[in-house]
Image (cartoon, rainbow, N blue to C red; front, side, top):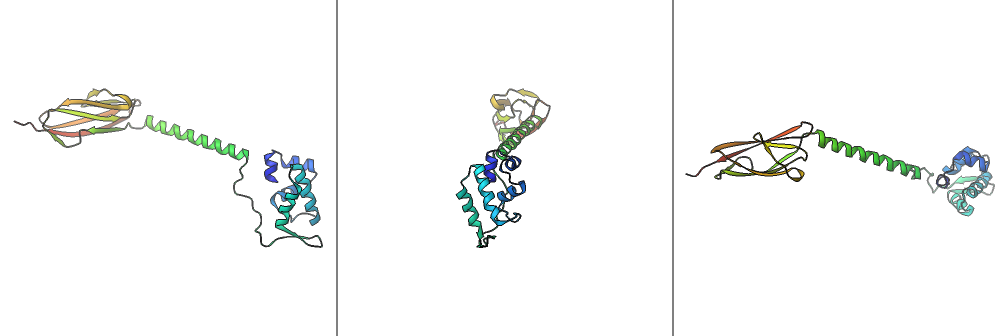
Length: 207
C-alpha cells in the first residue's frame, strides 16, 4: 500500500483527508501493525477503503492480510506464528531515491574527474626514458635517446631543449664523449613542477 501511495505521489496527510482514516491507522496498515486498532473487525474495513482509494483490488489486499493473520470465530485477529513479522526494507526504491542516488553518483564522478585533472595539472610531471638504459656501454659515439613525458610540459637534456611530439613522446640523438657520460633529463610542467631523471652511459672507443 505504501509503495502504491508513493508511486502516485500522495502524502499520508492527503490520504487521511480523502479516506477519513486517521493517520496513525494508515501508517499501521502500511506497516502491517494491527495492534493499535480499536477493534479487529475494523481492520478489514479500513483495508477495503484504503485499497479502493489507491486503486488496488480488495481481494488481493485481503488475501495478503489473511496470509499473515488468523481471524477467530469471535472476531479476534492474531498473527500466524509460522510467519516472521513484516519489516521494512533497509532501502526503498522510489523515484525520489533513484533520482537522489543518480545525482549523488554524478557529483562524485565530477569531483573525481576534477581531482584527477588537478593532480595531472598541479602534480610533478611524469617521465619515462625508453632508451638508453642506465649504465649501458657502447662503442658508438652517436646515441639514440627516446622516451615520453607528460603532455604540455618542457623537456631538456643536459640543459638543451628537446622537442616533443604528440602526447609528450620524444626521440633524438646526441654525441657522446669518450668515457663516462651523464645524461640529465629535466621536464617542467606549466605550473613549474619538475621531474629529473639521470642515465649514465660509457663510450669505449675502439682503437
